[in-house]
Length: 128
Image (cartoon, rainbow, N blue to C red; front, side):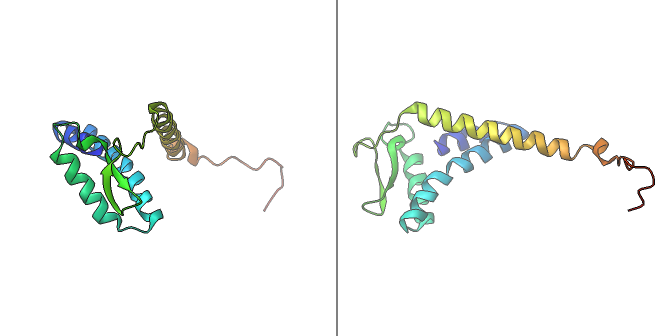
């Protein structure tokens, strides 16, 4: 969860810390979007989730907490029988990371100083 990743980010140094923190922030988009789609106050719900994850970090209770759309609050998703196969999350995270790497590689190609070279006109006498 995001709380665990933020805690790991504190112990990491340099660019690794920035990467882990950004990844944790990106994962918070999921409950935020659920709140926005349901018309809830996303800030309040996310703060409750963060508090619950931080409180129950040592026990197993906090890790199952999530957005409860029926009560406009947070709830234990395990008790509410809200389960998602791990393969779905693994595939989604893998696809997102691959897309990010592709975007970064394209960005690096565009910033390449050798790409500023202008080719001469292909047709002689073309004065346009």
